[in-house]
Image: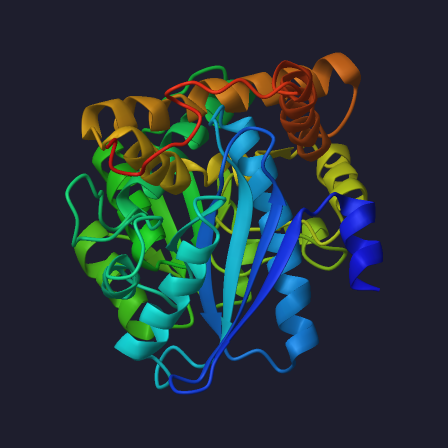
Length: 366
């Protein structure tokens, strides 16, 4: 069954990692390396089963291929999941063991921070491998990618606003934000600076209170966020929240947020939004600022260059909207077409191996 899935969806490699002493149980999935070495985060989660973990890492790694391709990066897609509770199962030994597995792939996969992992965890892996981004331990590292992810969402939202309202100004726009964690709080700070009106919700009362106190946001209940009258809805928490039940309740003109896999069914619910006159900004374009930032480490990190690249999300979202109109398809499908076209074109360019000084990329530009 696993090989059938790999053949069907184009996966290259799946690595099961176990270390008895540290308790490590992890899976690394490399989806596609047409554009370059696979890069993707390490998620630590108390999965209910090994099958659930496998399904998640496959889905996420494939998503990284599309995200990286659409962002114009010369990297492929991969992902790691660790089966465990990040609140109680972490240890230096566990992450150093994982770092050794990453090292054994000899640069085919480069790991980064994701849900349940931190800069400190990246630092521990860096002790065993150079093929890690987002650490604070090494020269040329960029640290926590959250601020750059937020910056990318901000520019995606401005381009979405331009498409809907004719201007990219967010001043006086009402933005309903679902979830105000690290990334989305930084986004809210940027929106507040521009004069947007914020309406927020979160399962964490302290996170809500911080936004209310510091950013003059209005708080609403978890379920009430779908009924708020606003200009833009920004899902920044769970996936699959745009579905048969929630879409009819929305009173907004656009959806633009950081959550992964916001549409329960890409085609069906993409069309539902379109039929209601709600423009959807595809999530993996919107939230690509973090991976754009850490990918810059592969050339020796330069923050100015990385920030300028993150700002190009504004242009990429515009391309997606243009494709959607030209081909009469929903933006989510248009984003896939943008990514697939780039991969397909470069498959032919890279079909014959030619060794150059760029053939193997060192994360630190060595």
